[in-house]
Image (cartoon, rainbow, N blue to C red; front, side):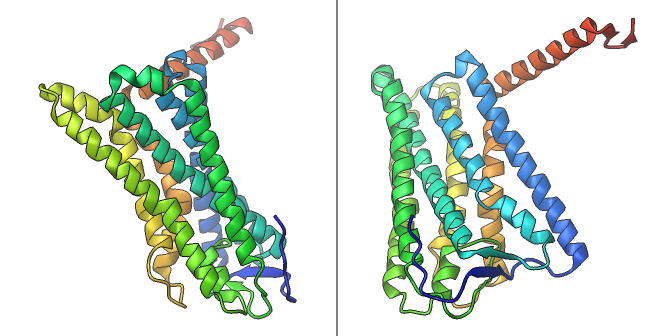
Length: 327
């Protein structure tokens, strides 16, 4: 990615962080705890799926990929936010801002496309169960994940090139916690009409188009479910995709409110909260939702946990310890 800067601006300063030392400490602890919970939650899902052979199927392969991308997504912005909370000068270099924005958009876009791939997987599994094994092969699953990554990277690269081609020779103050596209467009000392149109089109491609295709998939899924004669069968079938549906509503709902709502020149506290929810909230809620609503995954996590602690007890026994104390 080539950053073309035609100005004296060498860094951007974030204004959304609190100035009070007490508030800074509280914000730092809160962000750190949520970030650690996000890491642990997504790592738990990734390790469980990797360790449990029964989960080596397309649905959980996509879930493993989603957890990996979301872990990287939060990591692209949160460490810098944690550093800035404690620093007196809350800033980032223009090159660092470009890198942060690139990975934020690329990983966020990949997340969106992966949710679309997961919807396609559920559609095939429920609407065409006899052809599922033939359609959702390992090769096709890998291709869907790879295409999601490539599309996310290309869209992000195009947006980063458009933004950092603009001259920044005026204000360098960003009214947010990280390098946000909308804020950078406001700081550019040039006519940004074309870039704003490109940003809106990109948001539609990343959010609206996948959501529309997911909605069509679920219309077909619901029609198929309603044809199942027994109530128990309908509930069991719907339960296999209910977690994904909840995550879709959270992800696209927050993303649309942040990037598809009418733009204003002022960035208020509602926008701050939406940005934080989109950055922190959905990545940590996704593993929670999948863990609580998916029986297979819950059983696998329980099995992995019991196996881990059993190994620890065996190691204690090797050193002359028993669970209740010394021998």
